[in-house]
Amino acid sequence: MSHPDITDLQSAVTAHWSARAPLFDGVASHVAKRDLWREVLKAAFQAEIPSDVVDLGCGTGACAIIAAELGHRVRAFDASPEMIASARWAARVQSLDVVFENALIHEVPLADASADIVTLRNVLWTLEEPKQALRVTHRLLRPGGLIVVSDGMWSVAPQYRSTYAPEIAARLPLHDGLTQAQAERMLNEAEFTNAQSWQHLFPTSPYPGDVPVFVLSATRP
Image (cartoon, rainbow, N blue to C red; front, side, top):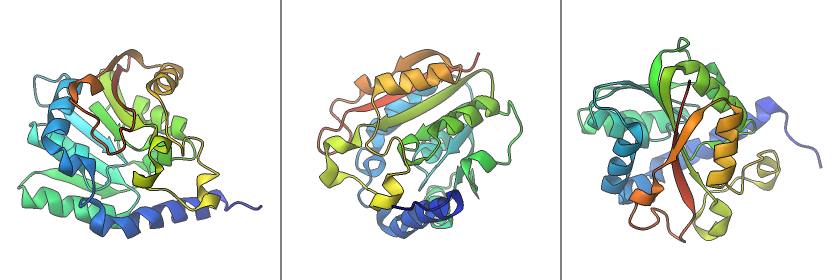
């Protein structure tokens, strides 16, 4: 079976999320469990003063909007123009000042060492090269800055997940999801240190089907 080349693959992935954008927030955990996510991310950010936050693969703005509510300066990026449009609308409704831009993760137009916190929520499983996203994050963070990454083992509850067409899924090494242990190994390989988990702050799983999820922070030395 032939696979699409990287350009076609990225176009297919972007089209998948663009098609979902108009109804995405209607079924999203960050809307249904919004207050819980706010408390967990506030703890994971470990930030007592306003900080520069970058949200990669922001979708409809889940992490970006919460970060702005917490008083941080936020820039957020996504490959889907429709997701960006939805995120801008959501921020505008709440009178929040967030800069949303359309860009692939490896093409984010930011200087090295320009962020205090970088978030990747439910992004790694969607990528053909998830380790590249961690390298970009490492580049963007100032020394001592934090990556906050969240994901889950989505194959546990396939009836609730969003999935790609088989020919796309076959190109994504983490399409089934990933465990906390896998994520910690990836963070270590990307030269992050002091990984801490925060998902214990959720009283129950934030997703239907009791999907095992993690929220990890780690430091860029």
